[in-house]
Image 1 (tube, rainbow, N blue to C red):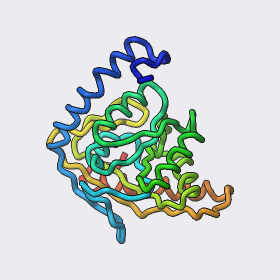
Image 2: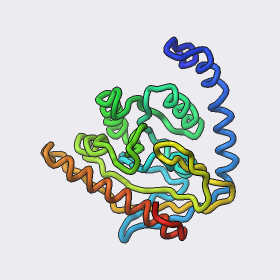
Image 3: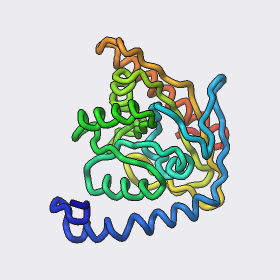
Image 4: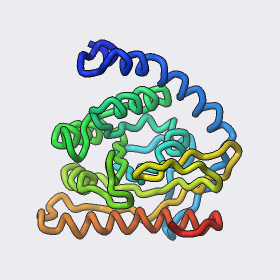
Length: 231
């Protein structure tokens, strides 16, 4: 059964699933061709550059920069955790047009199945991606999923933020960023986070905070690089 035939979606939603993803993908692709990416890193960090294909690793970024990340990592063939909602289905179909795969689940629904799916992704040598603050926020607060997956697999967590110099910010919980055409976009990498496979559960929170701090360093460094005020 395809998503268009899935009875959990209304007729209007099924029509939207057939029409919106190809149109949005084309628009993102065309505008993305005008963006100029500038890579910056914390000392000692080796970034993944545009066009490179990473290995069995975990990547995390804030939900607000999904759009520029979609374009920058389009050759990575990564797998991203996406919710089972209608919005998640739309996003999964758009990302598929850029070479991404999807594992369905979220921090609130299907969390265990999502983690097991991403564990399989890592074991097959592919890259797993989290929007660290999940599908609903709160903004700039990472969930525990990346830490649990890293502990399950031993894979390192790569941390970055993509900040456009000029963008429209949506009035949503994540202040979703839509980069303007021809804008500069800072690709800011922070130090990787590594989680021992034998890490006891009572230490998960400290690792989650380490991940959160690294994500915020990447974001603030990107803002500083572009001369934008911290938000």
